[in-house]
Length: 614
Image 1: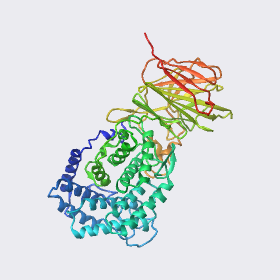
Image 2 (image 1 turned 90 degrees about the horizontal axis):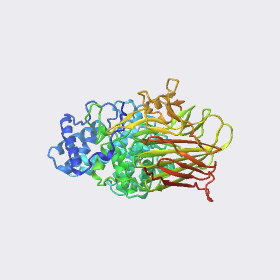
Image 3 (image 1 turned 45 degrees about the horizontal axis):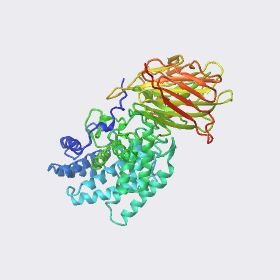
Image 4 (image 1 turned 30 degrees about the vertical axis):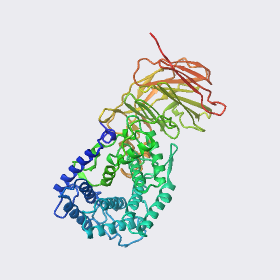
């Protein structure tokens, strides 16, 4: 079973001018064939989310005309704009809309669903999208729009802005991507308005960004991020927010957009595996956007020196939005316009400086959460999620159903690169059920193809084991597929266990259910409105790799040693004391220092490559 949304890396899609001209030619032919006598360019099977879609196709046709001067396009643009102006502009309040500050304002807005009272919650983002389609059409419409249409479209866009910022509550869905999109619309609209209206709109847009978005950012993994549907990050909408920040900086030059975009880009780079897989977020767990992410990933990847194009997107939306049965949909057309206009090239090389919340080398990567517990491990083409035992999620020692993973004190990290080896030592103070303070020292070492995990903890009574991950998915070239298999070796006995209980609170990796589906089933709210991350936290147990302690550990220590990836037997040896530990594997020798660290409390780590001869 393949995951439906995480497909090819987005930088694999050609993005040269010739490729974009071919995209616009295809859009042109389909649009001209679709254009109805009334001027509609909506997809014939359109249902919800259509308030802006015809106008989006119109803006693409205007851009195509600017590039090709196809004589068929001016009339099509004027007819389709007339349709939007007459059929998709609403000035009467939508029955049941809950987010109005002023009633019966008469200001225009775009409905998510045209029928009165049908799903009015989507009207705010639909109006943001309609504003963006309108300002793009104004930018590309010189010489193609009739004088009266141009004037009417400017006034309509201005009315959309007033509805979004004065008539309704701002950002009612707490969705960072929508809010930043609104700001972008205001900044672009200001360029079409005479002074002093232009200065007023621009000042309002910047005030909204600084006071209502930037000031309310949420911290995760050391980064401040625009909140997305109540959470810090969503792996579908987060890259869309990055694209909005890119466009905001392109048109305004304001430092705030560059600074915040770079912070989000570095955060996303740390989350992503080498293979571009990511999972998690408040709105969707596995659904990735497609072309909507390209502008931001490309623009800020170049600025921060990160290969963000490895992000696996939904390449069914590789160029533009489509309906299930195929065919161009104008939703998000503004993103295609902007990425065509932007000449930034992909940055293809990974950063070389160590990052606290990431370990990455070659085809191996580990993304760490706020507690410096792995949130995602990639090795040998397999992606591992944190496993779950007794409602506790993570990687770490387990004793009597208690996972020694949650830190109670400062988590200290040491990064080290020596030759082909890259290492990270994470030291955590933890307290178990016996209220005894212990230090869990986790050493991650990779040569770019394999990952060695060595975990040392003060000796635990009884029979502890290491919770070493949930094998969940595998890279299948063009796609990511579900798997419950993994190439993992342990110095102690290793077993792959599955939940004994059935039902939504237990996740068996052998089933066809995806992580997102299981998470939504456990969420408090219905699908789309629910928080799958919150639902996933309700999981009681999961498929898990369990490793017994390695033999030969010094007195006073339990040591667990696991290797992810190929390489034959794994039989490390250990020497030292409960304070300092030397680990010798087939590839390296490492010295892990005292949990107290050096004179400044910093972890001590040495790694030497082992050169074996026959």
